Amino acid sequence: MPLDYHLSVDDRFYSVPYTLLQQEVDIRQSGTIVEIFHQGERVSSHVRVPHPYGRSTHPEHLSPAHKEVTRWTRPHLLERAARCGPHTLQVAEAIFLEAEHVALGIRSCLGLLRLGEQHGIPSIEAACQRALSAGVPNYLGVQALLSGARNTASGPLTEAAPDPATLVSGDLPPVRHDNIRGAGYYAPPAASGA
Image 1 (cartoon, rainbow, N blue to C red):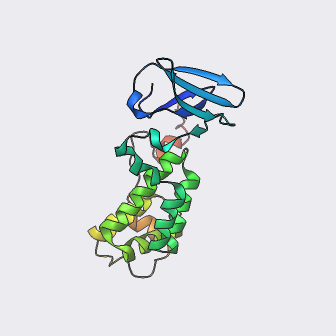
Image 2: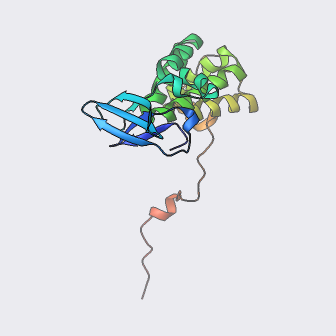
Image 3: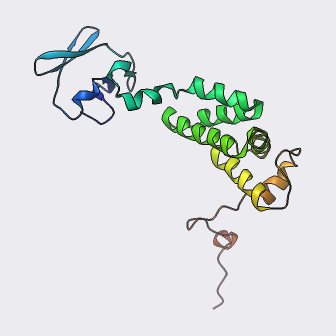
């Protein structure tokens, strides 16, 4: 059994009690019900999940340590972001829209909220406003703005947001990567004389 207490049946995921972690179980499907057995005893029963990659989780199956994590849902995190301010909420919504999977959105949104705890609500709200203006409404964009405000003499983030053109060229760090080619790479080849 996988480490997240869920078994895959036809690309749908069903929880089992955490006490059976890494133990062998049997699965029986009948109509709209999926049942899971351990040593001949039924340990879990679920209504069949209608869509592939859907999930059915019984809260009592989670270990006590992981029950706390179940409150980290998209609505809960958006509610927390809204308490910081409208710009933080907009960035959090953008994070979830761009995330390839909801779990990645949750992770990035938790990071955004941690930045708010570290820097204070006025600073995170101002950084989110600048990130939205600059077209970088994500965790890394907000983090770079907060780091830039700490490391430059440009003033506190609670000031009005600057012109987006200045922000992109001045406050965000340039992208550096081995696979990025300079303008010379795309120049036409020089003609060789014969």
